[in-house]
Length: 337
Image (tube, rainbow, N blue to C red; front, side, top):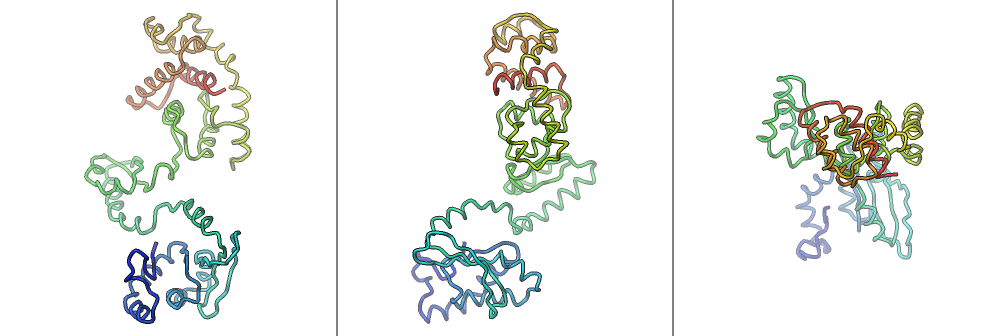
């Protein structure tokens, strides 16, 4: 945010008199250049100024004079002027043409600045081009030097982490995606999906999760994500939606899931500790927990599943046996239906 004509907290910075304007003209080169560079990459909103202000007109004119007709068309939605209109509680948006400035621009007229500020605070700015340029040399070094060592693995880093290049280079091989983990969406693996699901981490992009589930064969937890409402609101293909609805139809009955486990185990117990005391091998232990799910504390089952998943992750395994997958689904159905 730039206070072009000064700030109330620094009275000497305010541009209001003829003398102030002359001083501003003398010192404004850097401000104008900064605003023009921002217009190249991002939308910009002028608040508190009309386009009668000569400083604002000068800045815009300097910018538009170098644009092609195609670039001027793109500018219409990127250059926004908010003007105060007494008594107008609604936000009135329009396009105006100013032949002297050589461009069209978006105007917003209102008396309701609270609503304007509310909408601005909801804007997700993402990563600015300036930040990308700032770390360009680091990214190049990471990719070129580590790429020579073999197949690149993927690591998600925040901009802040890129400052610690020594720690990054301890990785054997990697490629970098810049952004926040809530904003960059990566298709999960079966292991990471189940671990996040049981840990109750909410994935920020339901559509990616639905697409992942649609690609999977065999049992996995799905109840929190696969709903008719989510399917209808997604942009998935008809084939993907058909697979999700088939899963809803075939795997939502916990009794049927427990029947499969019952064929392998009918030992009745009342706690995870009691089951562990039986000293069973892994698969019979999973089936015994599935069979007794109604007698067990769900928090204990959750802890047990996460411990098993942690072992699988540590061993760098890509698979989960069918008995454990069945237990995870039964836990999901018990908890979420």
